Length: 539
Image (cartoon, rainbow, N blue to C red; front, top):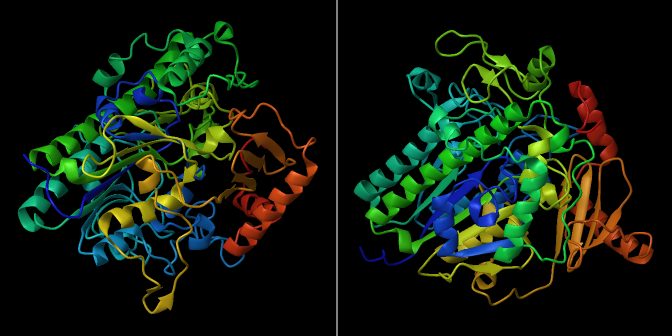
């Protein structure tokens, strides 16, 4: 069919806790033909950044503002009045509201994670932030077989997951296809905005047996060899400069030859790969629906991940239950009444509903190849994401690369420009902040950007600012580090001692941004974590 004319449809796809180099078109072992198809016929960004954690990334992605400006500085915890309120602020506009005001139908299938109250609708629920139709979870993580806070519109439908064979990743994809089919029937002449927000591959390691089986033996070589192979593919693709060496294996990760339970370790990564694979299968069904309706060529499709690979390692035994329930409640039994046993125990098998595992630091180190650190941190491994943009009517279709450094605040302005939508000056009669980002359409078309600008990050006291080639970064209890990202993107040569004046200048710039955007001091962040009874990561 010929492409639909007029303003483009928009499909925004977000993966959860997926590393920079996991998918095939970014060097990984996971088979992702649907995403590879988008990359081959679109544009990949090599230096796009998220904000290192799920809720803050979603807040920034959907509003064009930094997460601290919209109440989501850490997660959807209520730390008011002295901390972040945890609810998406009413003093901002979401991309769904911007698109709906421009005549778009708006849909969300998947994870929200931007409201404190996940049982009773409040002003931060998606149905009250611009989405005409919503299916998904309010919570940040949970079982793929029996997810809590499963909602359609504003009605809890957890009972639907009790059906045999029900699986959340599939339900997200299938509902997205239903939304699109019904849109064609009911509002076919109108453009749509669809936010497709997967929970895969966030822990727990839940996947279909048949998907896991396809990765049997694929990770037996271990993380040391696979990291080198990924880097080789990334360099060949032009995504990573050959001058940037691979970071050393995390010192807390053993050499593969020293691992006793290698078969079990490989099965954890195979299950993680199966989670990503199943997500890609669902994306393929969504693309097929768009193609069948003649809409795909004039649909702006954007794919990215909310943070780097997750190094959170669940201890075996009782400690695992404590780890999980610090974030989300844990089901005691499966749908068939079998006990759910949490923990990374080699005596257990990842994948089925009866276990609850993560893939841990060792495999997250692979996921973030070639970078340092993980989810939570604002070194490159925590904030670098694959970013694919596909829009045959409006963007190059040659699989080109865009090297312009960019971040989440740029997504809303990009969508708004493509949609011919106007960002409002007010919401509900109150003045709201201007967006912090810029449209990336000219950059994606290979025309560069109009202005030089600084990029900023803060999460849990981890801070960074990037100005051109220079990046100043620190962990929550450490001193500033300075890196020349053009020469050393893997952040191996700290130049802070050699460039004290630049460190001071960039630190002052970061502090001015933090003051303007309402970033809490590190000391207050530490107090909040202590009040919850657990410390910051790596403490």
